Image 1 (cartoon, rainbow, N blue to C red):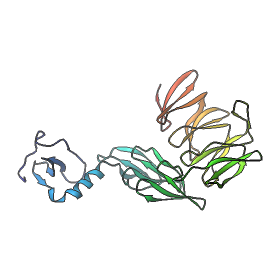
Image 2 (image 1 turned 45 degrees about the vertical axis):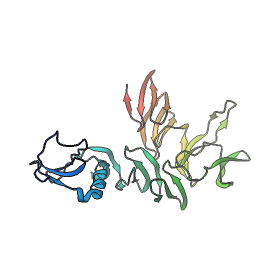
Image 3 (image 1 turned 30 degrees about the vertical axis):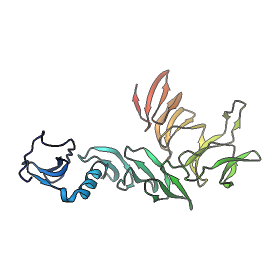
Amino acid sequence: EPDAKLDPFYFDDDFVSFACDYPITPAKINGVWHLIQLSGKATSLEKFEPIVNQFIERMNEPLLSKQNGKFGYTDMFGNEVIPFVYTDADWFTGLFAKVTINNMKGLINTDNTLAIPIIYDEITEIAEGASYKVKRGGKEFEVDTYGNLATPTAVTANDYGKVGYIWQGRPFIDCKFDFVTEFLRGFALVNLGGIQQPDGNIQGGKWGVISYAGDYIIEPTYDELAFFTNGIIRAKNNQGWGLINLQNEIVLPFEYTEISAVGDSFGTAKKNEVEFTINKFGKIVER
């Protein structure tokens, strides 16, 4: 079909345009991929079908790029699809890519949602797209693509009024906290100095965040902490409620009287009796 002409009614539904230095576009004609030149000339790629299918699949993935010294991802037209916020990053392999912030590594998926939080010294794939070996503070763990331990999770343990964790029946993290939450996606919230009230709430003390290694990701300096979504945490100080990430950076200022999580995809914040909608990245999207 070298003489085929460019005709919008001539192609199948699969039609992919891309920006490059060559004036060509891949398109399917009668179920076979071709390279279409601007002149309309079509060259069959039937002999190279396995390679072409893999190439087309990769074209639909976010493309690694670098801007002002930071890594992010664009679509095939150069439009930003994942912000340029990473100090290092890998190409996507299937659904996931390894990214780095300040020497800490994690895993994101194609819409920039955290799969494994960016809190580890090393991440190595064990089973493709299923499990990974992570390392922090000299300790290694196997986690799934949600950042949770691949084997049964750590559970809380109590020792003379102090709380820690056991894992597979063995001590995992020393009992040195006054209150802890269960681990979620590789981190847990802990309290030092607080007292549990009859209603189950914790009054006083300071809250921080720990990893599976038992060390602090965020030191206990906050009046209250609660899970939000996508590696973001609801935090309260003497100014009010705000949102922080696992690098202890402010995502949403501490100026709200209330912040709530609604499922895994969004939440709400209230200020001066006005309620705002927050997306999973901690940004106000609706007033």
